Length: 434
Image (tube, rainbow, N blue to C red):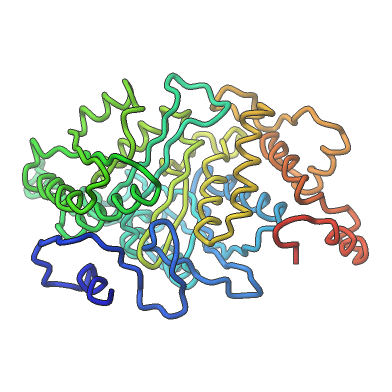
C-alpha cells in the first residue's frame, strides 16, 4: 500500500499517465489521525478534549452568520459534542491575513463549517477569491453535492437523486488572466492529468461505496479538445478499472437541457470546476432552491462543509427569511465526517420531519416568513423560546422534535446546580451536556 500511496501522491513527479488500477490512498502520513471518512480517503481528526471535537467556524458574508447561528443553537440544543473556533474573514480587505488565519485554524482542527465569503466584482484583478484561496491552499480537490428530492417540497420533477462531483482546485478558477493589450484579455483554463485522474478516481470510488451504477462525465471536449479532452481521457482510463459501474459522457450544454427535461436519468455526475458550478446550481433549483442542498469539500487531510450553491444571499440577509436547511444539513454531513452519526441522524430526521409532516417551511419554498411560530402548546413553545430566544418558526419545530431526546433546559438550571443535575439525569442525548 505504501507504493500505491506514493504513486498517487501529488509529490510524485514521474507519473507517466499509465493508470493501471485505481486504488484508495488510505494514509496521509499524519500519525495522530485515524482512517475513515466519505470514500476512505479523507481522515477525520480525533476528538481532542474529553470526547469533544473542535471545529473551525467561518461565518462569511450575507446570510452566512445567521445560518451558522441556527446550526450552533441546534447543536447546543441537541447536546452535540462540538466546540466552534470562530474565525471572521473580512471580504472587503486587500490583505489576506484574515483568510490565512482561517486556513491556519482549519489546519489545526482538520474540519470547518463555513458561510460563503463574498468576492466583489469591484475589487482589483489582483484580489483573489477568499473561497478559492481556501480550497486551493488546503487542496480540497473534491466538491460533493448530493441533490435529491426532499419530502414535503413541491417541485416540477420528482424522485431526483444525483451526486455531483466537481473538481475543486483548477480549471477556470485558477484565476490566471491578464490583459495582453488594451481591450484584449486572456484567461487561462488549467487542466492537469494528475488532478483529473484524482477526481475521477474519487468519483468512481464514491459511486461504488454508495452503490451507484452509473457515472457521467460532463465536458466540452468538442470545442476545448486539449483541456477538456484531457479530462475526458482521464475519466475513461479510470472507468476501465471499475467494470461494475457504467460510464458515459455528455457535453455540458446538452447536460443542462437534459437536467431540466429528465433529471432522473442521472446518477453520479463528474465534471471540471466551472461546469460543476453551473450544474450544481441547476440541480439545486430542480429540488427546491439553494436553501435546501448541503455541500462538502474534501481533501486528503481536511474537510470543509457549506451550502452547496455557495451563495452569500446578501439581498435577504437579516430579514428572517433565509432557509437554514442547507446549512443544517451541511452540519449533519460534518457530524457524519466526525463519526458522530447518532447526532447527525437525529438532527437530519428532525429537519426532514419538520418539512414534511409538520409542514413548517420557509418562505422560499412557499411558506410564511420564519418569525411566525408553529401551532403547538404554549408550554412547549415557551420551553423552546428558553432554548433559543430568537428562534424562527422552522427552528422551533425542529427543536420540538428534538425534545423527545433532549428535554428543554429548565429556567433555573443556569443558577441552580441541583436543577441542572436533575435535568442531566433525564437527558437522553447520545452524550449529555457538559
